[in-house]
Length: 93
Image (cartoon, rainbow, N blue to C red):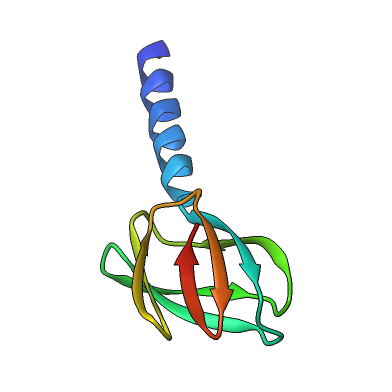
């Protein structure tokens, strides 16, 4: 009985860990407009949304690493980066 409980708890913990996967970045958006960038994480499509003229955090719900398309090309984000947005271009700081 105890062995079955331990296995069940392990499976629940593993499922919970994957449910909260995401790539979070801190951003400083110098543009007055909000941006929505297209991201691809482990083959799945997601969005990175940032508000205009703000500093904040945003999370891409996919698993790391994520390739994010922007006006200047493409950048790879793994999570924890500080990025700056100017004229729709992302720069990792």
